[in-house]
Amino acid sequence: MTPEAPFVVAIDGPSGSGKGSLAGSIAERLGFHLLDSGAIYRLLALKALQQRTDLDDEAALIELLREFDIRFEPGEELTIPFLDGIDVARELRQERTGDAASRVARHAGVRSNLLQLQRGFFRSPGLVADGRDMGTVVFPDARFKFFLWASPEIRAERRYKQLITMGLSANIADLLAEIEERDERDRSRSVAPLVPAEDAIVVDSSLLDLTQVVELVMEHIESEI
Ligand code: C5P
Image (cartoon, rainbow, N blue to C red; front, side, top):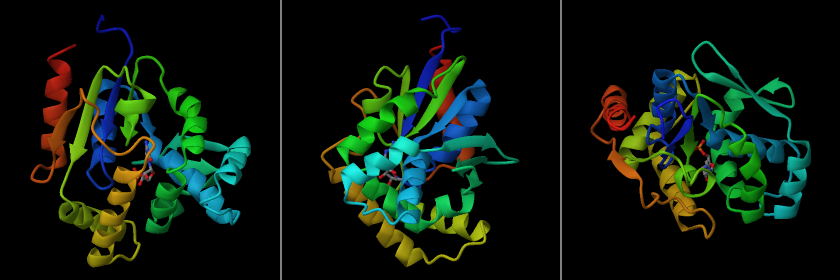
């Protein structure tokens, strides 16, 4: 493959591992597009919550995808997600939406219906995709696959700081319990469980800050392109 050929960098890992920030930095460094696949599951979950759709009703959730009007626009710092033309950045990051997203994401039919949409983000000069199954299911041929890990305690602490910065209230003990519950649900589901791809490079970010993780990942990429 020539350096000019577009390629995918898949970054998977549990919530709060820092993969969102890592993916954003790597995309910026490479000048690549970005796919935050968790935001897509969160947008569907939010739509389901708004319409009071039963999160266990796979057929009803798939029906919601028939009129799934979403878009992302660059904001000052973060990308702004829109659902039905409305900025939902705030609602999307709430724990309630994350929890609903992991329920929505359990359904095989929902996941397969979202494949095309996610793959559509792949454009020249390349894509950094972050989620749970980027390297295993959505982009199995990704040129680079990273699996970012951090202990649940560290992740709860990071999420706490993130929520407080956003002006939302939070409690570390509750966050830790939610993270462990969500991890377990993501890991044990029968379809696209949260596991590293066989050819993924596992990075433990527990004791590293964002700059160090970015450097580590960039070293891998630059050594091969
Ligand atoms: O990454 P984020 O916390 O925004 O994702 C929310 C939920 O969406 C996750 O807990 C997971 O259940 C689900 N998800 C998924 N596959 C992805 C991305 C997110 O199942 N590729």
